[in-house]
Image: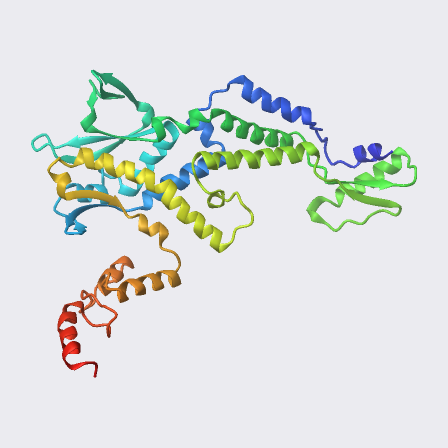
Length: 396
């Protein structure tokens, strides 16, 4: 009786998915060996989120060419690559977009490439031309890597191309194809489930036997009240029973969650940063951000920096010059934490007021270049004279 009433009160035909259906679909994807390319991988939301998170974050970081000065450094605006790396690597291309594309291709294909276009007279780099990874073929010439670039005649020598490898230079998409296939299978299952029938959330049941005509009347009345989200009224003698998730639906949801966490693990991203955890707090989100900066972004940034130093700077220049992404922006913390941090460094004589203002993108102020120390908060340049006065006359 219960099953008969259930069949009458569904608004549309509901396709029944059993555990066997889910297992069969999963097995078909995994055993079928369906090729997972960049487009297929990006259609999986978690893969897209991970690549976007890493690439866009690198794109927001400022890459500065610096000149060593004592134990510190200053911007090397005298070098031609200063503006090349910081503002416009190529005509009509911003530095942010350039590095975003470079890193995205590295994550998808295992390596990111950019052609170094040099001045024919001086040999100095004039621009950096991004090349899609699929347009580059790496060859070996007597143990030295050379590159065949689609659209260019001959080969490009190693010194004239930036090659940014991911771990082992291998594509994480290809290495973890089965994981991505499984995630795609779970998404396809859910899509097919919703496309083939409405989701039945409950049934009406009656403890009295009803004729077909009576069932038709009650069913039509109940279904018509669903339009426009109207308030529903139960007919006398009927009871509404909510249907919980089927085991198959629950299995699909759990599988999608586990696949998403696996993909986040592959790209070394804390799940909370791509919206996978429902119980986020300020503290654990802040710690996840610091982990992401130190263990995900920093290693990639160092690979890019060293490749640029090796190929855009001469051996003589590398003695006094280097390039750095400003990773500190990712670990700035909140206003209160930053204020306490700056105050500690100011009181210890490690930073000047103008250096702190520079970190916060504020203009310099007169007298803000003097270091301060804890003793009466005086200028460090006057400390020796002040010490002699104290030793001679004592505190007054």
